[in-house]
Image 1 (spheres, helix red, strand yellow):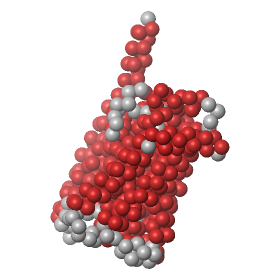
Image 2: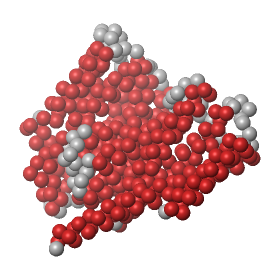
Image 3: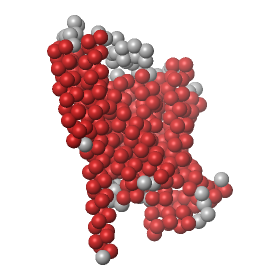
Image 4: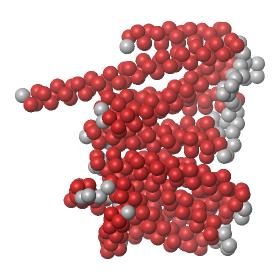
Length: 223
Length: 220
């Protein structure tokens, strides 16, 4: 755990000095929100049945940008070899990178979600705790499988598009479940109506945290 | 290999005979129902391919022997072709019966997402040159893709289902003569699967042999 903490501190320090990942994440997320608002008809109040989809599309697109960066600076000057040579367990590298990605996502969401409610005239009075649960369930699943796939895609020089191509098909059930529960929540439904979707998201998180944790060692040694 | 191909061809001729001349025409759906005898074996063999890819992927990560990578890649290639055919035959059947080419039913959605995951696997395979890296990444992708299947199916089922359930765990809701035709079609498709698998993997092994020989020439 202590080893992981060192990597988290290092990555966050780099990020807070360069601010490249977070800046592009926030800007792109905001851009998607604006474009989708224009695409669905400017100014009009968007029906709650589609607003969940819009919110998550913006967040996931921006999160992929951040995910792409978490291994990028390890590849500069082959820093990853240094990490692997040091007495740090590959599992600690996984946990650290996943935590860094989680932190990036949460920072982006803290800014993007209020912007969404402003731009789309939506109300969430009193339902905020449940929204946080949904957001965190998505973040966990996205970060665990995302860290694994990001480690793979950063090891491929030929194709810059590999990350979304590999990640999105695997993420479809997670996105579907999150959009469905958010839509129900924004529509004013009780927890009982979408609890099944939350369980499904939880199952996705558990399965993919476990398998990514176990598979990461193989990937990072090849990358 | 030639034997397998001949056996598959024979089985297919017999299956086609049974499907079109022996099994009765279904009373409600009519002739369209015949596509089912090919649709179901296609779906079974497609799923079987992904299972093989998953197991071979795991074995590759444990043993790091290139033959498991060749097996895994061969079965994914076959699986993607079979899944494409499943989607096409399903659409052809759905148009007259459900009056739509496509609907977001659990089985359809699951097949489509499977197709996306393993098509991504093939793109991944094309974009890596270095062998051990390609094998490892592909094995990882085959594993996480397969692990995703139950969740994909569950999430799709939470919507709704209009897909007919013909084969249940305890019985098959069909005429005996239809069952026989389906059984033979199933055998035909599985033997075709093994024939294709042998052809694809022997290509992989040949390629490996050529690289090996090239290396030896270079050393001299």
